[in-house]
Each structure stands twice: as structure tokens, then as C-alpha cells.
Length: 396
Image (cartoon, rainbow, N blue to C red; front, side, top):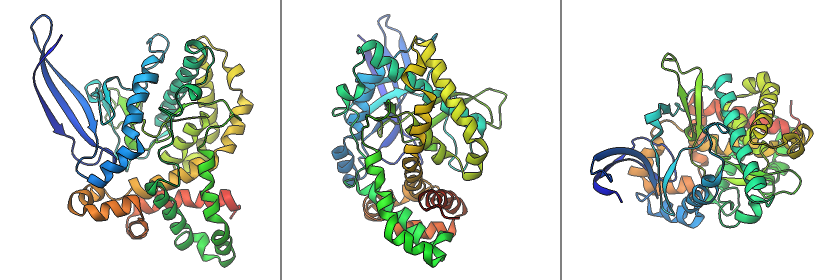
């Protein structure tokens, strides 16, 4: 038994995430040899500063979901460092309203500024770690559950949908924001013929994401992350890499949106959320090759015949089938997480009713305001909305 001598919680400033409160937890304890040990952890809890948001988070079950994921699934994934590259933090305590995990900054992992443009090296190491997670998921099914799918075991209790649903006010507000930009600001809205097409068809097209977010029997599925915006990825750099251009490690955090879907879903979410159109055009073929080869290699290390599980042809077909999900989800996220630094934090503290309204009901006014006044917000949202419209309607 360990005896806790004292502890201190220090709130992490800024906006590390939007659905919780975030702390560094410092604990001093006495071990079995009666030595006093000090340790530092990362902790996140319900967003108790906002009663409405706390109730919504509790109703959605996202903390319970992540706690169950760490307890019942990730803890059983292969962790042998000779077979698996680290891709997820260690979790020491998981409850329905709180998680305590290792402090990754001790191992020199760091988050990345929202305004940073990720390069090819960042994207490739991220695709590699996604492939590792997906390979571990497949290995877990085949070797530990005799081929029983994770879906059959945990879909209703752990990997349930929390976000991509018409019942989520936050998500529907995001879809409305994408529609607003498409109809009133995007360059294709100034063409009367194209605007008529959007008026009649766009909303129904956006709502197709609900069906794409459901479980499928058409493609092999794995545990997927989906919420792959910049704050949910931590990179590690060598001591000489002062410019942070060549990451040597990558950890995925925050699995509250995890589901059981084809691995291409994570590939597409990462691609559309983290890169712009020029980057995608230059590297998409290389990234498809890199991810697929990485997945096959990691499956082989785990003793599995990857091509018999997910063939290249199946992966290519799944990429096209789920492309709309990646585009729409990127649009929803860009219309929320890319507001100027400090805006959402200030609203939470000073104008909680407005924050709740723009989070849970309608944020069109904020989206239009910052689309018109903030270059970064404008460019990221316009980039993805333009590609979405070109994909849906073959606009040129």
C-alpha cells in the first residue's frame, strides 16, 4: 500500500480542450520502503465551471466512454515494446467523471500551436501511429477474442456514438455553420446556378454523415479516434530540432469520439483536418501508400497476414466511400476550434450563456464574424468548404 502525503492540482491555462477541465496533479506519497516519492500526472475532469456543459457532457457519456475504453480495451491491447511503438498515454485512474494519465511532457512530448502548418514528416509519423493503433485493434480481436469483433463486445457499452448524430446540438450547429459559409461566403455562392443547387441539395448531403458514422459490414473495422485536430496529437522532437520540424515520436490523446469503423476514417480525418488542399494534392498518393504499408508491416510484426485482413483494393474503396465524412467533419471542426486564441476561454468565463448558445445551438454569427476578420480562420474553413462543394457537386 502507498500512503499519500499530500497532493496539489494546478489548472492548465488556456484551452487544451473544450469538453472538460484540465490539470497537472502533483502527488507526494510514501512507498513500501517508507521513502517519499513525488510524481506528476495529467488529469481531466468534467467542465464543472459550466453547469449546462457539464450536464451535456454527462448526458453524452463521453467521459464514461473514454474511461471504459482505457479500462476494457486499450489495457488489453498488445504493449510489448519489441512489437508495438507507443501511441497512447498510460492511464492510471479512469472514472466516469475523471481521468488521470501520465504527464507526457516529462518524456518531452508537446502539443503544437493551432497556427502551425504540419509538414510531411509530421503527417507520416501520425499515420504510422494510427496504423499502430489499428493493428493493435485487429490483433486484439483475432488473438484475444477468437475473431469476435470489438463491435459485438463493446459497441453499446464503450464505442457508442456521442457526436455525429442529429441529437448533438454541438454537431448540428457545426453543420449549420458549414452550410452558412457555403451559401453566403464561398466563391461558388456568387454563381446563381450553383447557389440554387446548394439551396436544394447541400443540407441533405451534409446529413449523409450520420449514415457514414454508423457501423458497417461492408469493410473491416477497427477502433478509430476520429477527433484528430491538432490539440489531440502530441509530438516529440530530438534535442537538436529547435524548429520542431522532424518529430521522432507521436502520441494520440482524447478518445471521447472513438468508434468502431474502417481505418480509412482516421486516415481521412487526419488528412482533411490537418492539411490544406495544396498539401493534400502534393502528398495524398504518398500518404495512402505510407499508411497502408505501415499497417501491413505492423500486422506482420504482430503475427498477422495483413493482406488477408485488409487488402489494398478494399482500403482504396473505403477511402472513396468515406471521403465525405472526412470533409464534413473537418468543416465542422474548423468552424469551432480555429477561433482566435482565447476567445472561447473568455466566453466561458465572462459570458457563459453566449458560450453555451454558440456551442450547443447556433454559432453562425461567430463563424461569419471571424471568417470575415481572421485570416487563419477564413483560410482553413474556406479551403475545406470549397473542396467539399467541388466533391459533392463537381463545381469548377
